[in-house]
Length: 406
Image 1 (spheres, rainbow, N blue to C red):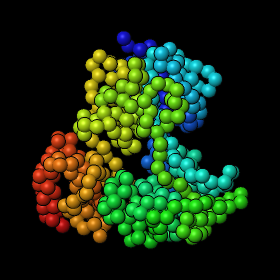
Image 2: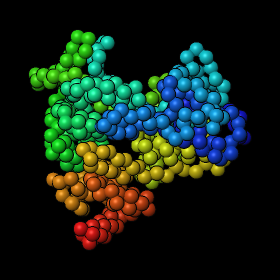
Image 3: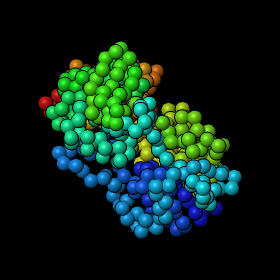
Image 4: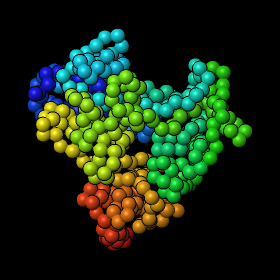
């Protein structure tokens, strides 16, 4: 039966796309969006890119149409109100001390930035996940703050890039011996981390942070090896965790995100999408949780389509795709970075290369630095189940095209 009242929990990209899909697919019933932030849905990737490194302060990057979504989509907006629990049996969502009845729910609460233990009420320390975070970081950078970034992942690297664009010095601290080892592997992590050195960013690896110090305002970072790094601004970029704490007593499987089947269904009349979901990928024959913009956008709409017609629900098919901008360079990853990469174009000691990843005889991933025209071709080949030999042949063809146009 078609639900009368659908509740979308999470004012995220996945949540916004789900709401749009509901109306586009002809749902005429009641829609409610419950969001912990007071803002209508906005785009997060620009927060660590254009929002920080633009010459002038930027406006909040709301999604197109988000500011009038209540009227345009006939959606009840409950913003600044975090969900605190859900009763799957009676179909009730808890919001603080009140409850909200629903017929079907789509959870899109995303992920939260991992926090670092710091002295209470210490100013000048921030994560970079929300627009409020980005505004604090931007204001400190505008004041010429000495910046230390803890964590040399993609977000931390984009912050460092923004600082260097202003001509200021920045120090990055990474506890692991090689940055991005969990995201792209040790070998590719070494290649990408070299980009920082080529652009004058100090990168300290293999050393843990012992303490962040200061009185009312941060003054520096103490490392486990005894070094002290002065700072007026500390940006913490040590990863994110799925926002599932509020579901602890729900009965849902929330280990590393909400467990879903291939159609994004988590339980009876409950679906999940975006960073918070861990779904069964028919492409890779395993459960995946992907914190990528493209996944959240596609998954939110697909989950809503299945929610509206569960009898004809279809598997969600998606080859992960991600990009990051450092120092004017574009890093792109399609598929999965498993095993050791093989360089098939360019030179990893420079700012242009392509490396491929394999699982047995299958092509499963492609990492590109400043080869923008290549990555989507590899992504399509991965989606087709292309072999390693197919990947090498595509590399040969692409290299011939690049050489002809040089």
